Length: 425
Ligand code: GUN
Ligand code: FE
Image 1 (cartoon, rainbow, N blue to C red):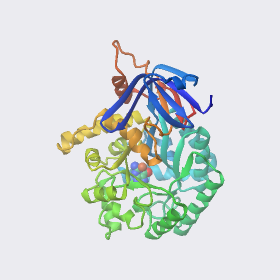
Image 2: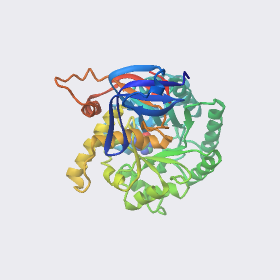
Image 3: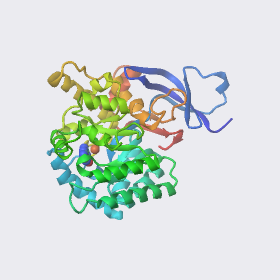
Image 4: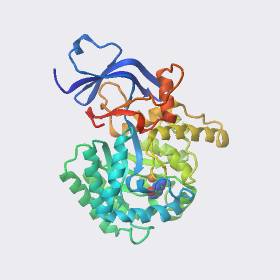
């Protein structure tokens, strides 16, 4: 029998669509050449000789996808949470990110980040690094070595930040090209560059023009921040009076979806015009509910995004969010939606477990292609959960056990992890 085919036996649970769990109790999840071949209730005779890994009693879920996380901010998660976004950037973020000029420091800090991300239920992530090319490549080396599948961005910033961090506009573009070439030389299999203009306040028009040229030349995806916080949005209005809305300030430069696959974090204050443009341009939204609380941004209208048919996934936004644990992000998404419904907008019904789970798997996974589901042809990204620590006096069905994972689970529950059919944990 071909060694690239194997089977995991266990309680399979996933979502094909936002509102409904697919559950196969004590089923068989078949991997062939790194992809899902299919899920079976009873194993077909033809697969009788294929090796079976016994995870009976455990839960098998698709690996979780973090659409927005800042690797250099991992060092100060949980600190300085009494500030609002712009002050938090000045006081916490910029001084810390400046340290990554020093490769020794970057190595130590990124080692902790990568180790913990590997231990988590996250299999794929869109990651911000810093402005530093060398440190970004070091982070990419480490992520590749860990076996995770990621998109990583060297940040671009040529205005409105301290001198010690600000790039000269021409240098920012030139360094970005060098970084892309260096990354190509290293022939990563699971680590891809993603263009990362930090946000509109930190990028001049000239830099955005250059980044568009780079985007087209190297056919790269894009990540950034959008409509996150009231004072930030006011600032963007001052900086770009010609833009119709915040997202238009990116779209004018061709950095807002369409031919440049784009993921935008937050969208707390996206109005109908911005929603419409995101729909037309197929922009992905990274919903980061914990960060939106911690830096006093607000509550994103996720139900509205779902109704409008937008692509939406979850982001931890470490260190805006204090944890990389995406189970917590799912719980926060439900909690935030309930508060929005209760306090702000009764039309927007709260989110359900099967909706936030979809966002954390297939919703965000779509940014990586056929990822986040167990339908045939999807990447074989699987997390095996042993939830026996979360004791309960009664029998609980598979769905209830997953719901409890969302609120109570962390890396102690992770028994194994597969990315593209490779066992990495
Ligand atoms: N906007 C610009 N930079 C950042 C950042 O590092 N974190 C968050 N949450 N928002 C930002
Ligand atoms: Fe962020």
